[in-house]
Amino acid sequence: MSDKTETRTTYCSHCTKEVQVTVSPGTPRSGQANLKESDDFVCLDFGDKCDGDICPLSQYRPVVMGVRLARSGLKEDWTTVRAQCEGCGQITDLKVLDAEHAFCSLCGTTNTWMVLEFDDNGKVAVTGRK
Ligand SMILES: [Zn+2]
Image 1 (spheres, rainbow, N blue to C red):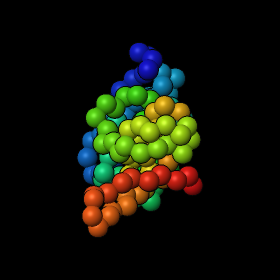
Image 2: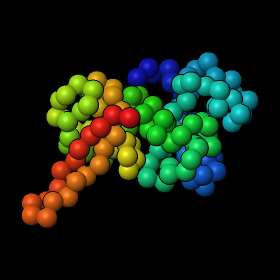
Image 3: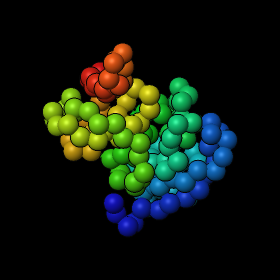
């Protein structure tokens, strides 16, 4: 993470609350509209509530913002699921982005994942690639 990244507060109409976002230093200050055009825009409040079709701040699907946040390293307290990454083959703690996607911080692959439940001994997370 660059220490030049600015953190700002903006209103998210989907989460109906103020959220923390980071933008690159070059982003003009003249309002929220510019955030939509910034490739470096990352929402720090991405989470379970980001379940809509489109993130109103970025105009991307929420999972895209989740991947950005995971890549940025700005969030520490991810829910993780231990599974084998489809990208690198390592068994690791994947960061859960939403009910279907999990991010491998070793190789940067976004896995799809689901939990298989067994009658006798619990459950196991399995991954796939879209
Ligand atoms: Zn991986």
